[in-house]
Length: 80
Image 1: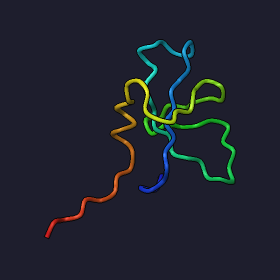
Image 2: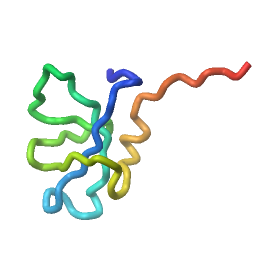
Image 3: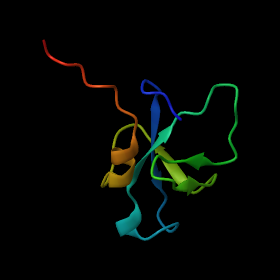
């Protein structure tokens, strides 16, 4: 399970890989520095193969709602 403070990558499938309406901005946990993954897995479960997506420096296009709903969040602190 990814940690709450783990950095995320913003990834969008390239044109032609999927239709334009499916080119959402996915959130992917950053792999450890010492690991070269064979694919990336977005929080929504989408498996992203090498060469099929672009790494984004900022959100672009519609966000993947499933990724947003599944990203780990820090616990809410009670106000006292």
